[in-house]
Length: 470
Image (cartoon, rainbow, N blue to C red; front, side):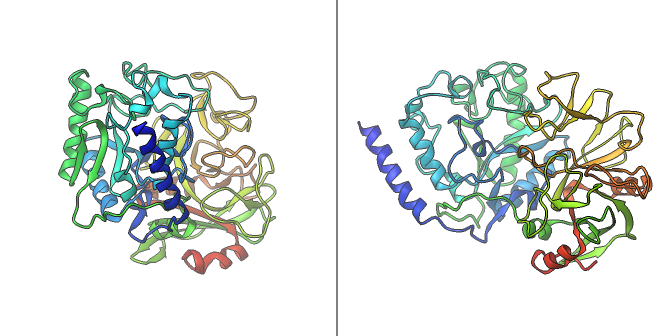
């Protein structure tokens, strides 16, 4: 009875907090604007967490932290990268309404993700056992849940609601593959083996935990004994108030202000298939031209507003199979090509005869590069990336429609053109020398962006988005 009373009191408190939820305070920043090399797998923005649903307040899969905490985390990343390791975050700032949502979960019937996250614990005991807090440090912007990437990590699996559940304490190769090294258990594993000093894990996991803990402590973070993944920054500038503003997508202006490298592609109008590209580098608050402009071709039906970090204005909207290149602001993903390696700082994928890009919008793999020989096929159409054609001999994945919305368009790249007069099915293509130059210039640590749209729309957005003059 006491537990139920406490939970309902918590819910009432949360409703009051939610009703007066604030906007994002100025000291709270998007982690990717401070260090885009830190990987993100924001579990509470999806159903892949112990509740089996996205929590209230998580309107986007983005890590936000106080500026001081984000900068400290970037220092950890820098020290780990020198050793061949890195960070992946699972949760950062957590709206207070999400904390209340966790409380509601404990009062509801059903355990949709028990097998994976708490196979030996009753969910009504989460608080008593110290796995969930009634007032979370995450809501103060200085607490982060994360893991260690690096050598011996298994490739990250793509989660879908249909994915089978594996006990989070199972052997490393049998539990969920989160792209990290062996840490003894999975994330959010409510079990004694997840305790930081557990003696029930193997020597490799103990070593990995120690490496992570040591790097975090040197930067001013302190751990939590019940969860190896949980760290709080204790710097002088840390604020103590609990916050409840919702997590939203990173806006175009936020991205552009943080970007140190910009590629601007413009065409004369929505229907034009030929355009011009210009590179820019940030010098303080100014974006300056880097090199000369170069010619590109876009979709055979021109451009249309795509799905990226912006609010599109008037004009056509892109959809699957329309032959239009996406207009908007986009981050850049993996570089790819026919060669085993490439002189680029971007992540690189060597294409094989079985590499495909899935364009079947009914597939959970929609808009993904996959190895068709290594996974079960659940798609009916895709683009073969390795062929005798030279178009994909060098290329870069453009993060349009990521994460994917069904039917919004897929498999958008920078790639080699067939000729200066041959438009594409929706990509942006250029001469081999120009894409080679891009591959050597782009650096993911500089948060490179593509800004692509017709000239009139670019001029309309230039002042409000902080874009350079063309």
